Length: 294
Image 1 (tube, rainbow, N blue to C red):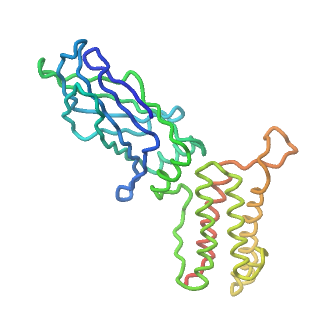
Image 2 (image 1 turned 135 degrees about the horizontal axis):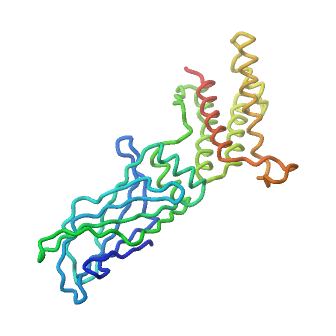
Image 3 (image 1 turned 30 degrees about the horizontal axis):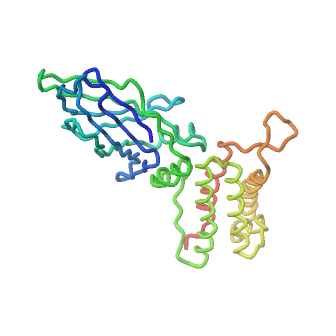
């Protein structure tokens, strides 16, 4: 649980809490958003608890050390008075995002836990003095979301992949079902990418093409499988398409090797996030290209 206290009339009387495991992704009509269930506790202000006030505004900025400020939010209009008996009120903060900011944040996260800070500011009304006063936060909520929760409950809900560049429609036929079954491994590779398992991404993509070859009767002879898909094409086109797809398939064989120490020139090459993104992009494009239309 992340927690911070805010000051009113010289006394820290407002407590803000946020459970990182309660965050969720939301899809607001196609726009990705991050849902933050915030808890607020308000106690009387002043050294003797005799200063009356009303909390009328709470706003927040989300920051990440490599990115700086990347999002903001404001709670619905408030008119909340303190209570001498401590209890927490529940509020919903909705942080709207876009694909560019998500990509920058995900690149910064690089398969680790999601970490960001929430800088808060409040506006209070003092009825006895008939005045408003803004109180900036002198600290921040430190939010660290376990990567498993972030991937399953946030990123997956957005349904917004940075590497999907095509839309694939699988025909409702026996052949279409074969291609769709092989494609499910790409969905698995997406989750591995989000978890920073870049080597496994390449291995899973390679297995998706081998599964396709097996289903079409080629028993892991992926090159022959690719060639068969262009059997009715001009010989020159068939050869070049086969070689192009086979080249990508060969690239995926980087996956089975263990990650190497980049300083060791004799070691097997390491698989980077950029490598995995390239492989995913090409896998989506290949399936869009080779999937039968009917």
